[in-house]
Image (cartoon, rainbow over all chains, first blue to last red; front, side, top):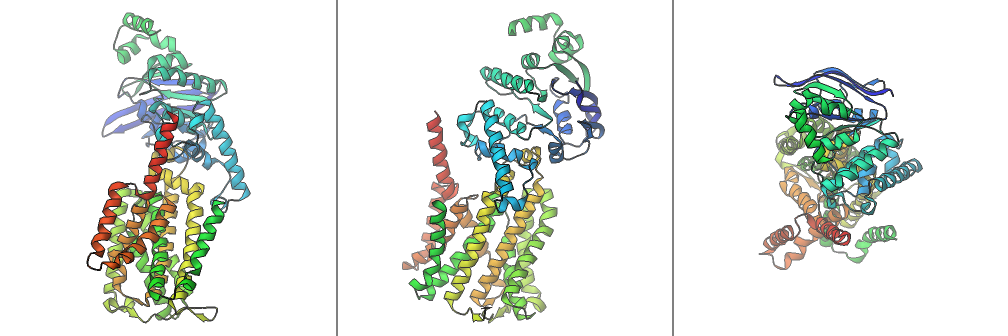
Length: 265
Length: 313
């Protein structure tokens, strides 16, 4: 597997606080990579910098061979990196259909005048977007709400909608910021299933999450941040037994963690 | 079917001068057409895009003055004046909009308000250009293919034709993906950016189109009044456009069109009681706002969402 996303020595500080202090890692093509760490470890800042929502002070970000460092958010999305947000963001007053088609419209060849005069090119692009939208809405299990406004969905359903929207333009990689935070525990399994299915279809994910069980179940590779630095990385199993990780992240000894995990399983 | 009904209804308004010879009624109809267009233009920037622009008043005034000055001072035709009204306003919208929209929505409200006040000052105090508080009386009747548009009926047809054109354009824009993107920008700008869309060109375009349409409306209205002076920039106009958008339902094309026509007629219908007319008007507005805080269209939408929720349960 080749590296799809490569982060090299990323740094970002706020008023002298080093939120991200020289983080490097790669996300392999076709993998599900987890990014975990205690509160304030710099996870959110890291992905905000990757997605262009904050400007990194230094460091390089390479997506599928293209250097995207310093680009703005919409340019990075067009380069093929889509993200979701920790506090779910959808267009509350728009139908699910529109929520999805808007997410794809920058990626087809219809121009503004095509749209205004409803040319054939516009209709073809709109039909293609609609077909893709239906396919994805089926996949995340929200098909019966397709024409309803997003505002009527539950929080967990909105997260699924946001995931579907991020997949609309067939991006190289989707960065998920806490996809199951605030989601009903019984629903978390559904999210897991959807992500696994998508990954089997070739999608690459970078996931920031607090839910260790979720990350353990899903991720091929896990990166642990602490105080803006990379503390460890490896398979989920290796991370679980790494004493530094347990100390920093879980604040417990390996024995306690073992008991915790057994309880969760 | 629906489209046919709408076209028929729109064309039906054209026969109004054959139904009445009352210049009073036709005058109200001219105001209704022009105000509705200006309100629909405000709806584009405020209702769709979520940017409250008080600059509309300035664009309205600049449109009126640009058209009047083209004819009276520079010897051009009325139509050339309207062209200038549109172009000048679009250019000003870009110049004012670009730096302001980089700062944020609140800055936009304040700067556009200041812009409108500034235009009022220019109209009053740049006496060499605008002739100051005395204004420019006796604006000549425009001519179209050799016909002088001097009766109120003529002006009604002009206003009606412009309204069809402008509203048709705004409708096409609002229902296109551009329109939906403007709504998306209002609802969740970071998400728009995350989906590969740069919001700035959309906001600027909406602002410039809104400015041009308002300016041309102002130009036509000034020649309907046959006089332009600083009172043309009275806050009354801004207030009228804003009330139409809010009562109709910000972001709803049809809501604003219906409110534009209804609210132009309402104060006149209330003339049976000349003492209490504006009080009743105020009470009606107040009650509508209490019952339908999202405007008429917002109220209908809420009922639809409630039904959908019930159906899905």
